[in-house]
Image 1: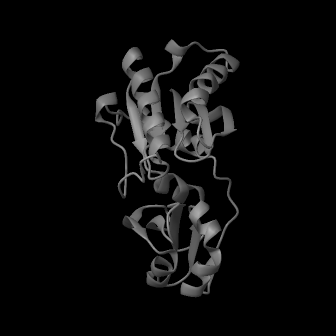
Image 2: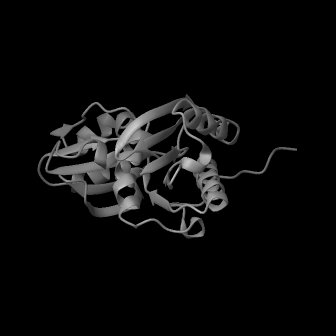
Length: 221
């Protein structure tokens, strides 16, 4: 099955194409505030480079948050529009689930953290060694969630990187496996077998994961 995956939840924007479970192409971009202008050209380039047409894509996957409020909306609306136009199924997965999958097997407990970009908080969730959700997601202080975790644990995500010292204060025996934070390729590998198994949903059924309201301030006069 040919699956196109999109992640615009952070400045590390990426799109990837998987064919029968193998990632055959990926585009990575740094896009702090230009997701809507960059994602469609990246998708078009990726599909053309693979020698395919848009109609050849059989399913779409998207990271649904938590993350940048605007970025989450851009990714969802892009995938919904493409899938609706082509009458293709969709699959959404949380940022934290995808991050946890990148460190599957690294420790008995896995903790995925996304920098919440406000105060000393992260968006976080706790998983078992096979990246199955145990608790969360939630907005929480990094040292608080670290102190709750028993036994050996591995941490991943830009929140784990930013607050590594605070996490170690809460849990001195923490591990931080080195992983890239561009997520579309991992999402494509996770989504392809599930879409192939018929677990896809209609574009309208996709929902964002927001753990707090948007941080919107009125402009000065």
